[in-house]
Length: 426
Image (cartoon, rainbow, N blue to C red; front, side, top):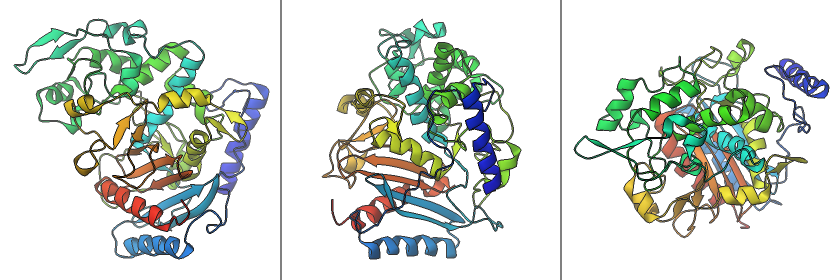
C-alpha cells in the first residue's frame, strides 16, 4: 500500500513538474510535498494536554471496538501545527484485517462542502466570481425562481438568489431526502433528486425548475446548495468540478487520496460500515453526478492538510490557497436568529441555540459559554460520522472519522468532551 501511495504521489509531482494537463495531474505552480506526512508529531504535555486523559480517549475508543459498537475509528488532535494525539483503533470494516489508519479512505460526504466552498472562493479572489452576484449570471436557469406557498401555490421570488446564499444554505433550497414528508421534499423525490446519471449542470437545471422553500436570504435550510455551487464552479472555471477542485485545492495541498472517483487499486483501503447501507456507494465506480455537497472521499492525513491550511490563515507549508482576509470573510456570519429560526436542521438548536452562526461553507461557534469549542471555531461534518473543526482561540484542529451515520451525534459530543477535558493549558 505504501509503495502504491508513493508511486501515485510521485506521478502527480512529475505531472506538475512538466505541466501535463491530464486527469489526475495538478498543474498549479505550487504544491505541498505529498510524500511528507501532515502528521507532525509533538509532545502532548508541551502542547497543553494531560497525557493520562488522552490515554482515557484511547481506552474509550478501544472499548467501543471491543464491544462491537464500531469496527474502527480514527481520531486526530493537533495544536500549534503539531499532532498531540493520533489514534486509529480497530479495523476498516467487518471481517477485515486491515487496521484503521491514517491512510484509510472514508466517504466524507458533507465535509466535501468546505472544500468546494474554498474552490469557489479562489474564483472570487481572481475576480471571476462575485459573492453578491446573482446565481443567474452564471446559471441562467435560476433567473425566474418561484417560492412555494403554504397553500401549494407558487409566487415569483422577490429577491435574486446570490452566490453567497448558495455558500451559506440561505438560497431557499433544501435536501428533499431529509424532509421527505414535506410537499417540497416530495417534489424533490419525484424529480429524481440525487440520481447519479446527471451532470452537475443538468442537476442544476432540475433543481431550478422546482420551487424554493423560502425567499433567498431569509431562511437557513440545509440543502443541495453546494451541489449547485459545484455546477457554478464548472461554468466559471471552464473545467469539470473534480478537476477544478484538484487544481485549486486538493492538488496544491498534496491531498492525493481525496477525490470524487478513486482508482480500483484503492478499493481495499476504504472503511466500511458495520451493517449494509445503500448510503455507502462504491467510489471506484464512475458516476456522472459529481456532488459538490457530498461526493468526496478522503483520509485523515489528507483532510488534516486542508484543516491546517484553514488554521494557518489559508496557507499550508508555504502553499497559499486563499488569503487570510478571504478566510475571514468566510468566517463572517451570514445568518442571524431570524434566519436560523425560519429554516430546518441548523446545527445549533435547543440548549445550543444562539451559540452558533453559519458563514460561507462553515459553521461558526459564537458563544463558548454554551459549548466547549472556543468562540470562533469553524467546522463541518459528514453524515457517515466524519467531522473536523478548527478552534483558533485554543489553536486546536480535530479530525474524526468513522463510517456509521447513526453514531455521528454521539461521537460529536464525546470528542468535544474528551478533547477539552484533556486540554489543561487553554
